[in-house]
Length: 325
Image (cartoon, rainbow, N blue to C red; front, side, top):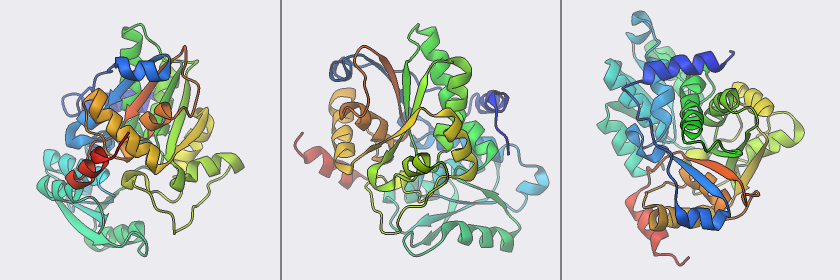
């Protein structure tokens, strides 16, 4: 399944009036830390609190009446679930989402509130894709993958398209862009869009160090799976292997893959609240964490980062804020 800039531009048209065109923010304190200029794309301000509504709506809005009749089935750790549920309600399509039983309560509650049916499973012993595929077969429903689908990738790519267009309008074209990466839908789609508008930009994916499947795959040139024992605070990025389509795009488009520790992510969540005045979830904070912890050279450069989501449980957020800098 091929994805190109035309697909992303068409997705942007479908999303007009549905998703929020999140702004590019700047912050003095962050610029001081970076030694250069940093542009922040805050998708935590997006509909349902993350970028995922973009791909979900782009996929569901292209279903035929016959395909939509029996609803859709998806699998997600929480943000895609909310995006699918919201898109389904907007389009009057029934949605069922397979979610890990330990997903953040706020994500589970919001998925149900937005109209989605939640099917729980154990992320460490169960196969969410197998469960979803069997459920879709039983119901005659359409599948809505969380990342490895051309229409999902094109929808997520509108993040990069907006970022590039707005940075150019601000006369601040970035030298480099850092994008959170789980299965790779956001980084692959956005890198295509960014490269179409900013030919010299370097795009980096950022992963949790304990879920560095894309980084490992880059090293050897083919998809690698991490250990089933891997754990991370970044629930949204706990993908054991990159997608087939997404890795193919990322391998061609990305300048590299960076990793950050859970401790660096917690520090980024504190920084975001105390200095940027925004609430960020662990998986959404990895690109910010990479800048704050000096994972690449930012001095004298313009760096753009994507904050991919802000759906964090209140108790965890309070615990992290109570920790010392």
